[in-house]
Amino acid sequence: FVDYVGLSAGVTYGCAPCGEGTEDTCETCDTSDCNTITETDTFQCYKYTFADSKWSKNEEKVTCHKMKASAIACNMPKEETTEEDSYTGNGCGGCGEMTDANCGTCSTGSCNEWETDSAATGISFFGIPIVAALFYFDVNCFTFIVLRKYEAILL
Image (cartoon, rainbow, N blue to C red; front, side, top):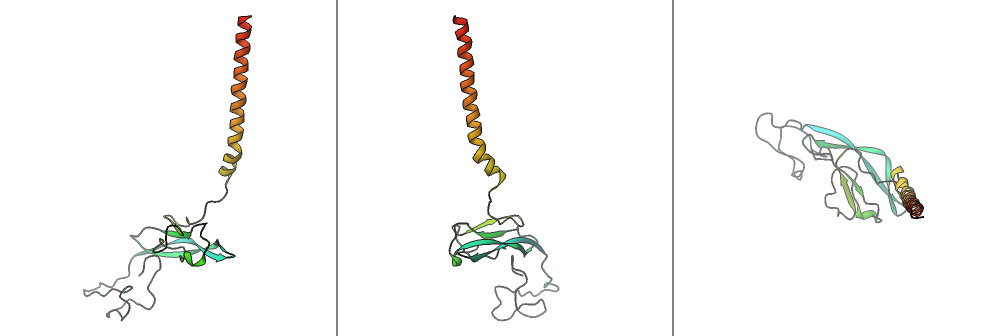
């Protein structure tokens, strides 16, 4: 079993030594009932496709397989990654040998999607100038009222 991939291709559970060339994906054991199937979980992540010089998120999620004790991990290309060969992930697991400049990770299922324009962005974009204008108006209005009050006292 390979974390974030699933059962190793070409390797089956059984009572025999591992085949030649399967050292990275097969374990040989020598005690009774030692070849039990590893406890696993599944989770989902998004997969990305490169087209028209940019990455885009596929709508359908991929099912990822992990050992029960392993953490959930999803990967994705960074938005500024514009070369197809700079990100080689399939959505499942960490970035591995990909650089942080081209790959990002997260630790909950289906978490690997870019931030999008949200209502909060709209509120901050339009809301801050409005609050500033109201503050300016209130300060000037307060100053005007205070001056008028002192003017009445002094006269």
